Image (cartoon, rainbow, N blue to C red; front, side, top):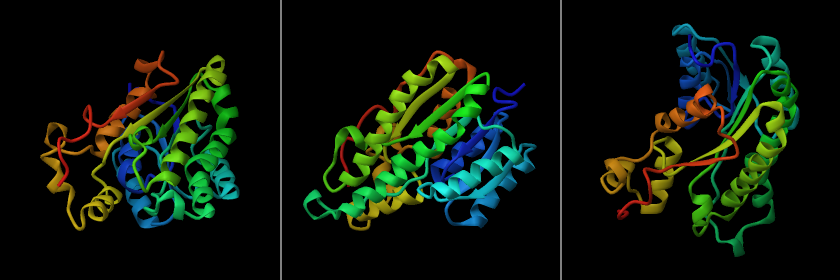
Length: 258
């Protein structure tokens, strides 16, 4: 029997990149998966098709995580289609514009807080009744190793991620009595389209392949690396793990950057 049989997961931002890898892995382990996306219905449908073709259950749902009404409608639809939600993986997000704090408009800080913290908090609030009624519930937040590094030109992003990390740690304390685990996964640079864009911007046109040999194990992190950690955290094997932050960066920063 698969480890997640009978469970229902909402994975935000799962039409591509890290979210896609997580959705596929949780489905392979037996969970029914709500594939959430903001735009790119075709990509989301491809993820669903891959899951269903392998014998799993999945359906795509369009909802921007910072639109509370859309999130409410999504949760209602998931309950109707797949059943009560007992796993939430908060993955959807966007990057900062690369401005110093002195030049960053207040609206940019608010926008990223909505996407990375306030929207995900609302989603968690909406499914907490399901999780409390279930034998077990899991909240996993996909953060970033940059939160602890606080690099220049990233304040709206790192601020928003840090806010959500603190919320998850608090949630772990508050909901433990209900059998709910809440944990954080913090990757380093990941081989996704967003990762490639960040590398091009930071290096003036360089590629992830250029950087790979300088990174631990001769490569950068992949969506599958992150998916494996998430799958562990929501499994019975991690039944005594909550309120933790797992960094997935190969053990440290690269030796050098091209």
